[in-house]
Image (cartoon, rainbow, N blue to C red; front, side):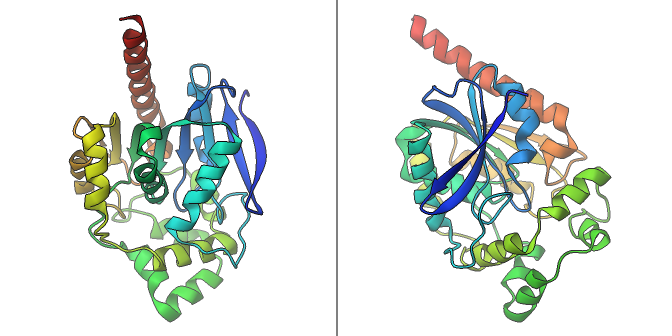
Length: 286
């Protein structure tokens, strides 16, 4: 495997990062997980793209193998300088984002503040214009019940039911165990704080969308049609921010297309970056 793990210390926090490809390149495809999630979920995609591009997958504070201090201020804005500092340490100047779930909040907010550094974005069951909080977020946001929920480790059978869509779940048993294991106490505590410190709907999304619209950033949306958390109607709404966006709604797929439909997701990602690289090479030769 040509993907290496390296720990970075940013503002006193340890952030493990998976990376591969040309690590000297100042341009990178950066994958950011959601909840539950971690950098390791992107390994097949890092391996696919690393022969062609620099690839990076992050463990955000509070998630995966990263530090999860109780005293960290778990707000979206608190993560943004960490991203900037990490990119500086890694000498990454230009970014292609691949974002899933809550990774969309981190990545799109950072991109709006660093618009000149964003080369493209792929949104996997995430994006702007969340209409309301889903049931899991509401549970975490409930004052007493949310705290109790964060203290109790999830039971596998209850977890499987919680992330199913209308009683159906297309994840494999090992994937279900992996996702459940990502929900340790530090992560549940971090996610409770993030849900409580984040608004839905967020009025700022219209301003963020306008920034992206002016630049007409190359973009792709991949969405599992049966997502029980984020409605599939959000997929088409992303065109308000990315006028030239490619939108791919995958049938018989839920919240984790990169797990549930890996071959389709790989093909879409590879074609997207193949076209971007081809366009770049054509511009250089013209």
